[in-house]
Image 1 (cartoon, rainbow, N blue to C red):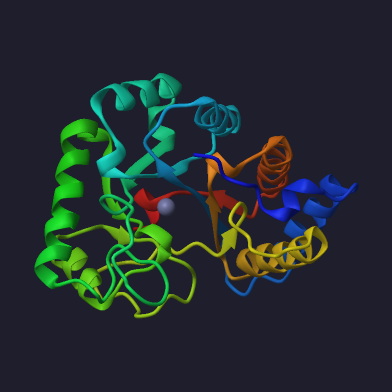
Image 2: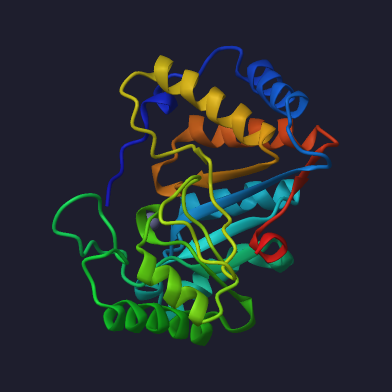
Length: 261
Ligand SMILES: [Zn+2]
């Protein structure tokens, strides 16, 4: 499948390194919490080993930064899992492999796309959630962590109740998602979108990305969403620049769902 990169990756600002450092510094300076700023990265739509995936894991390995990997259970096979694992030798502790829905298909007839939305019965929702988990537990074994990222970052109230009933450690959606998660099901929401941004012009896209990034850091928890299939060379360059800028601040602590959930 071919994915187009977001407009910002077609024109990167010339002063990108200093601009990124300034944005991170401004976020840290304005933080509204005591203690460290928690930063985590979540990469979605994982299942197929390919060059983009290897490049992504090499980057995180180089900087010893953990990464939450949202795996689509129905897309994963034993050979694919073996292929994915080739990138993780000696770095197993960095990767938080978890569940990204079941088949990544939309079941809503109207409104925004959802795999686990209100159009489906509780029985069907629970069936697919369990099926996905069983498949990942079977293929990934000890590597599987029971967190759930719903496709398109959204799901309905019933799905959230099912996740809590099945003792999931966390759910990860977009910041401010409704309905809110029930007590007993921690949220690890993302608040920075790097690769599925909708702004038509790169200028506006960058303006909004700087705002999102600064606000996320200032909030004390910055969750950065990655879609590796949509990354072009500029997107890879920026991800490295961003990791370096964050790693350069003593107030920043890189983490993942295993510590947050
Ligand atoms: Zn997805």
